Figure 1: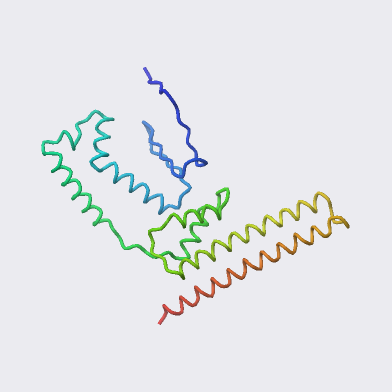
Figure 2 (figure 1 turned 135 degrees about the horizontal axis):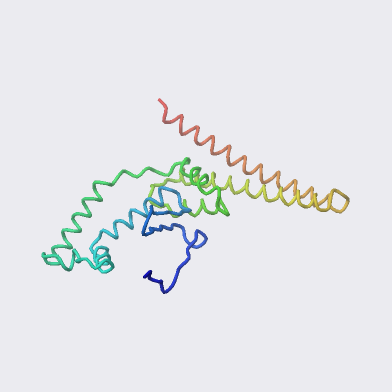
Length: 214
């Protein structure tokens, strides 16, 4: 007889950032709106928690198997010490030097979030959450320029859409001429701002490259 669950929970990327589904048969499915390095780090943290003494105990309760912590022949205190030592050794073996925040990382996050409802907002969220890489003022300024450039171009596209919709709906006449001109001026100003930020970032990256080259 097939067991009927008491309740069914529905999760989507509108309410969750990372969803892992492991069916009874077939491969696991992962849905995610995080950058891949961030998602991989989250999964590694989950794996470490499951492999910890508390995680093994919870798994034993769910599966009915002996708990490796409380049912082990050695005293619990000894088991906990050994578990902590093994965990620290695994962490030391897998630890890699953390690379600083690079402009390419920010652009990669923008590209990853290109299908998000708000690409720029999602990217800003990810960059602010990813606090592990060391950052100096120049790197933070580069990230700000890249994200604000994308945001300005996003706003320019919205203004252009309003311009086109107004002209299509009402046409160009004495009543709409001033409004359409205002839309055009606003769009031009925003694009100029975006281009200035992009030029400043290109110059900064060029200067950094010149300093690295012999």
